[in-house]
Length: 310
Ligand code: 13P
Ligand code: SF4
Image 1 (cartoon, rainbow, N blue to C red):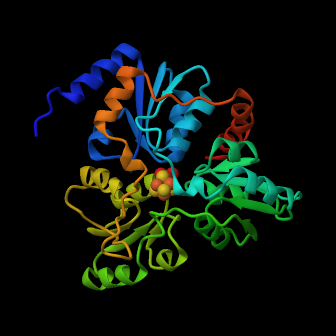
Image 2: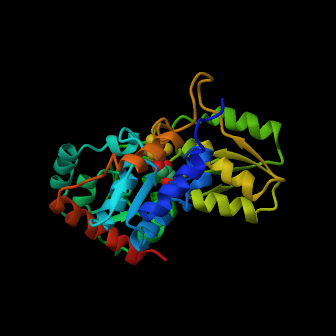
């Protein structure tokens, strides 16, 4: 059906009027990726949010990402097209339970994956993303015990890469835990020329079949550099839009979920639509707002991450 207004043109116009920047994650629907000023992984998005001179940040991603942008920019208006765009991983680490966990291990340094709420960030010493988790853990002295929260799969991957003994919070992402090892093995047999690429939020049973493991940006770069012509992609399939744009001659096969009635799209990311993004800009709502004390406490470990990442 034909849209009564040209949303692309209307958003472009509002962007200029408001001096807004649109930051989008790779798991957003293709139309949103196409209108964004910047598309990236969590580290790239945080860096953009830290350096933008726009007055308004329209964050096309999930709540913790928009919240991170607000933590870095208390004076800017940060809009999220749908406030219900949460994250199962962030939800798997409630602040009260985490405070008790932390109190039970007072000697531990707390490194938290950016996929957590501002309250968890405020209780952390350093934040990390999937692109710098290994690099950051390697910078911590060997004798320093570490709590790693909230993703047990990324934590397990960091343990395997660094040989460190991390105390893991048992959280996970519903999307990355949906991939079926069995179906990936079947796909590999059907496409022996294809390389399996995976996000470290996947379970180790899936990661052990991967030729390459990395953040969304790293996966995208790998597809450009690899000589392989086909890839089995074990992460949210929204990123395939960019993979196909960058490498139109290559084949990208989404890794299938365990059950054929399940879906491998992130139900939270996909709550944002181009229509909601337009309305958010037009009405200057929904906005992300935070108590200043929480913001300041959450800012410290994010700044530490930015200092510690290459
Ligand atoms: P990155 O894009 O930082 O790899 O994160 C993936 C993810 O699951 C975001 O929610
Ligand atoms: Fe959260 Fe997983 Fe969705 Fe990323 S893909 S936003 S980690 S639920």
